[in-house]
Length: 120
Image (cartoon, rainbow, N blue to C red):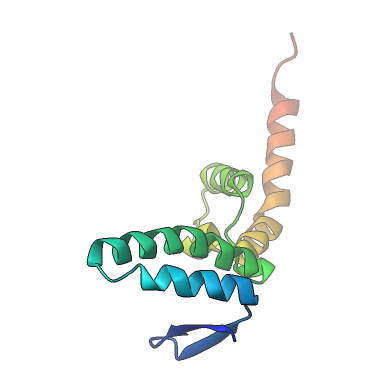
């Protein structure tokens, strides 16, 4: 029997397959959640584990960009004086489009600056 994840705001119902052993363990865990403190603690632990797992399951373009991509995009925006939209910092697909659009110009400017520097 699957675990059901429900988000009423998104009108979303996802059936998550579970092994019988995992289902049995979850049943035992749920019996321990009678008091509010136990329930709150479990919800926090579940959220801490579930959020990264859900992110890992997303399509590649919906995942967050890497820290290296964010650093590169920030350098591009600063040097070229172009906007850095919020979606670029949140979604890998938007980041890839931004880097495709501005990356080559940034690299060319970097090369031109290096070539213009006097040699010691």
